Structures are given as C-alpha cells and as structure tokens.
Image (cartoon, rainbow, N blue to C red; front, side):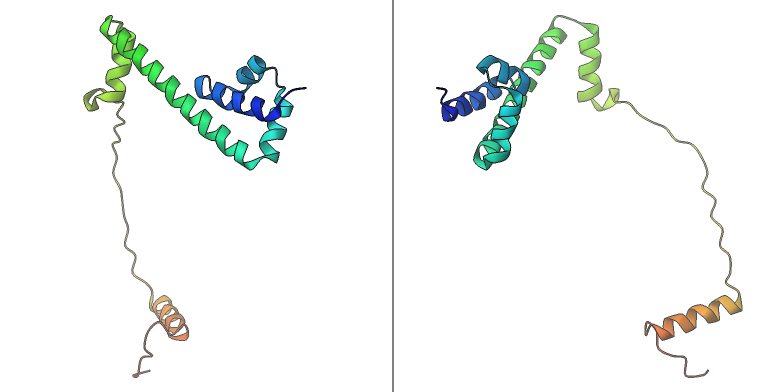
Length: 132
C-alpha cells in the first residue's frame, strides 16, 4: 500500500527540482487527478506545492541565466543581443511618438453656468449666491 504522506513529500521535493507538475507526477507514479485532489483537499500541501514550484522556477531561472552568460562568454551574438536588450538601457526597445495635442477651451453659455451653479447649490457644494 502506498504511503500518501510520503508521496506528497516526494512530490514537493521533485517540484523544487523540476517545477512541472506532469513530470513530477510521472516520476513518482502519481496521477494528475490524484495530485489535484490532494491539493484541493489539503491546504497545507497546496501551500507547500506553491512554494516548491516557486523555488523550482527560481532554480530554472538561475540555470537559464547561467547558460545565457556562458553563451555571451562564447561570443554567441544572439545571446549578446538578448543580454544587452534586457540589461542595458541604451539597447532597450524604445517607442517614439510624435504628434500634437490640440485642446479647445469653450466658454460655458450663461444657461450652462446657471445650471451648474444651481446643481452645486443643491448639492451643498457651494454657498448660495445671496444676490439672487
């Protein structure tokens, strides 16, 4: 009989190394439906899974960046361009916009001004005009 607690711990450890659920499940002989059932039924397991996947993603990011730096060292032009584009402000993608903004200022008609003043008075946002 399989030990569920042990399988869960092994899944967590596997996801820290390879943060892909399908691969982790296949390596341990656990079906994806079982994995997701455990995750929905066990909040602590779900939390540990999320943390393990994050840790695994950070590991893969480190590996990818190491390989990118090695490719730059090997004078791989694509790697060099990628690195500069993402790490050097001179080489970042820029968008230049040209144009004019036209603003128009239209005076309110006396009727519009009166309607706004009445609305503000009714909303108690301004003091009533004592002259009217």
